[in-house]
Image (tube, rainbow, N blue to C red):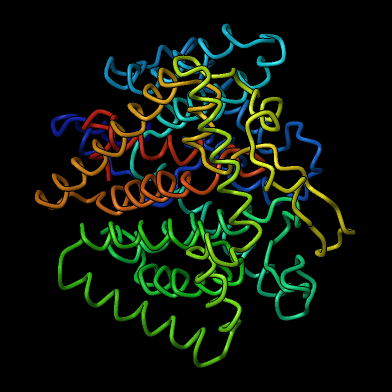
Length: 452
């Protein structure tokens, strides 16, 4: 009888670490990331401006449900006490502002939205990301979204099919339309920062082409970002890039700044892409007292109204979703009735100004000092933790420094951009994903973050 040959049993002497895992594959074990990837990519789909939940919001809900299911049935380890405190702290302000609102029922949709964006989605991201590879997959999705929207925006500028700006249909808005002019600029900035982080510190096991490709994409995305004519996004992106470059070392920072400067000269000066309009747009930020831009004067008028609401109810604010109802009673007479939007396939429309376009003032007016303190405390803890862990990772030669750079860049961008914008539109849910990425890097256990 022939002997039956059986393969030798695998040795367990080396422990579980001896089993190699393909760094850029393994989608069978990463299927829980699919709802997160869908949440990132689906805002690109044209969505009505009715204010209801879009496809990306549905995908984020699926991600939360997947997370809950895995916690219940697979007995996953929940968040650490520190992470639960930091991510759950804003709930205090949300709940108090809802209960103390003049019409709590009208404030409930705001409570649901705030919980989704600033609590549930970040927690789901933290729990569904198993290691640095999962982080890179979600960050890569941000780059893909940015490239699609950036190409669309440049095409709109070249063909004159964008949103109306200074009498011409040249403003790059991507698929978001003129009713959400910050949408394309936001996703392009996310992708630019994620690509820049990968170019500055490429993962060790990455293909050789990844670093130059990431660098080219980061520089190329400057073009649609510029053509968005979004001043707040420009400022936030510049601040985030400078912070990240400062954390990479002096030599690399100087080299990167030289490359970015050269790219800016070529794009704006060499090709003349909107140079006169860009210069005028940038200068309009400071023209507040002498011939200010209408959008600038309206923004400052709404900021003043938000401050007046807070002074009226300093502790808990006027309640979630309360700013539009109290705006006219606190705004100056110089505030216009709305902003004009047109182009990109949309007829002329007057869009009401229903928020102060400053997240911090919106929270202060609707949630008071209690809500603002809770929210700022949470975000400050995430940003400080992300920077601290990045510095430690650099000093120890960590293999996931690219994740730390991306987390710090995205969190810095979000913190600065909220000085000129607030939540609203189909890209709102992406703010939750960004907060989740930063929180995962800052608050997750060292075993999860250190996985290459």
